[in-house]
Length: 296
Image (cartoon, rainbow, N blue to C red; front, side):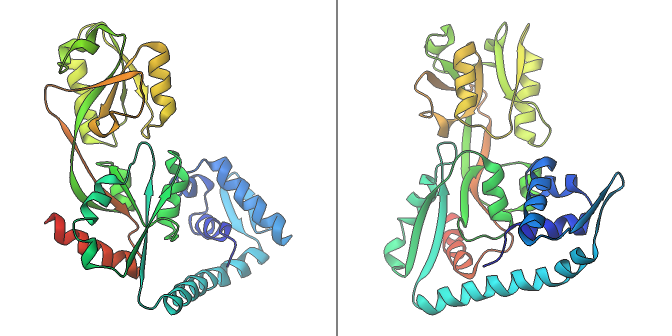
């Protein structure tokens, strides 16, 4: 209905910065600039004046900016009205699923009451474990995906999205099957001594920070390898190739066949649940209200 790059353009105009927009949309500044360049090329008009002090709007940019917000709002409302007209008696909800963020916990919960809500149509949407594009989709309220089920205590996520807790996942250690520790039934922090351990080292998650501090405090000669905040299969491959231990959650026990996933004896957990836009669709809101009644 409209060029999706308009949303990026509006934010760049509001912030005056490619970097600030990149942070908001979970992209690199170069990726934001590429989208703005593509938009300018498509309409054959310069929209921004770039300088060392930031960006400002050209005359054409000011006109596009003036109309773009109303165009986007009009299109979104038009699409929602058209869908409601076509499916007056149905509610459509899309749930994302991936290897690292499986939707099974939510689907299992829904099946407890689904017979009571025959007008709800649930669509499972697979996505790659590249959260940049997926989280951008949620933030822009794009209806391709209404919900993602994921572990979460991220400050950044909780500031930008709403979160409905469904439960807790136990922290575990993914140990290469040929590693001496693979014979253990649980892993103590002291077991990390003289080992290379991949763990998230940023300060965005209190629980991950706690795990890291416990490893450092209880181990001798441990080599810490920085893990990306969003795991994907490449993280597991890297650890398998180098013989690293990897801090994981119990839900990832079947992600990679070359690892045995063993619980941490200390018993730390991380909350998991539904991540969704702060402005969900009406259908998504109704669905959420049903789920909230199940998890109280």
